[in-house]
Length: 65
Length: 138
Image (cartoon, each protein chain N blue to C red):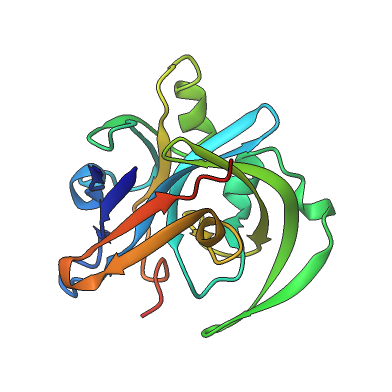
């Protein structure tokens, strides 16, 4: 059994806007950019899988409440 | 293998403590690939992504037929991209993705006709976690 936890609070802390690229183990932000395109461009030579997520947004409608 | 994933707390929800079942997912469209995080939504018939994510996958969504969809909170305009590949915890599958106009960039949902057909998903709310076990289709 594999266990995962994605701590968005810790990961996105300190970032006000733009997009971040999060490491494959969900433990750290590897890159940050003003937009998704810029962030992906910064990561283009990185072989590990990175997960992209926007920061500084209101996530209130990520889930239905 | 059974994956156990803790529900996630997103920024802005610290006071309310609202948690979300979120999965890491990679979408692949030919040579274009984009990994992000999707809400696991048994109330969604199909997967859904924002136009921002669609453009990162080089999907020319504007050229796809426009349709109207409905949610509990209202209606939305979307376009369907078929035969997109997805990968979750090493399990690959194909799906149709609805690309919704005018929604937040982070919007990414997996629903009943994709992830729920690929895996057994069990929600254990009392522990704020869910389990996902992919079916062996061979």
